[in-house]
Image 1 (cartoon, helix red, strand yellow):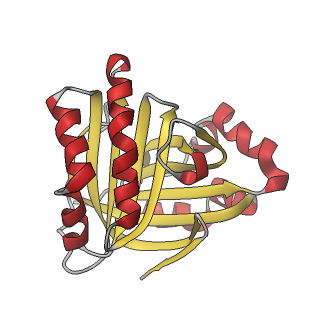
Image 2 (cartoon, one colour; image 1 turned 135 degrees about the vertical axis):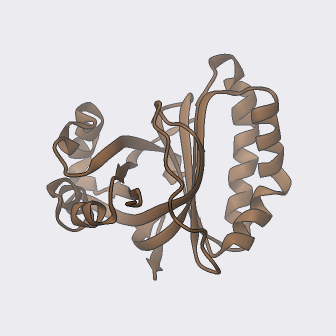
Length: 230
């Protein structure tokens, strides 16, 4: 059975391409039509300075795509016109190819398969997304900022990005960690644990998806940081 493969791209739009960058939100998934093997796609904005914030960034954005096979994902990453267009309009450009090994929940009704084997002592990526109930939004955001600050200070954190389909209510967080131990230590302690307990205990979300991935490859620059895996 083929393994679903995800491609996540993060971009900081170059100063001379701001209008092009804004048009990505208007066009949405239209530029991704007819891409072989593409089974799910989201065009995303980012929080201020690329973090997890109620204030949107005017330049930082990204997209998340899932393909039916590794081969289709690699072909897309290497030769798709839309990837080349983003890269040519970017001040910073980061791309990761990911294999899901643990996933629960859904995103706009789409659920990922758990077909990859768990990683040993190697980098792990995490994607958490949620549709926040409007009457729970204030409580959610009160918990979110301390959790983000804890990520930046956590041992083993390689990269973090705040993403979203819509400000305030439809949010996602993408992170990369050195290994399973480092992500578990963060997830099971402090501000993040408090936020998770509150979110699920008090029913903050109308829909959510939490996925962990093996990192096949990751390269580029995000928030001024150079990342290269392997």
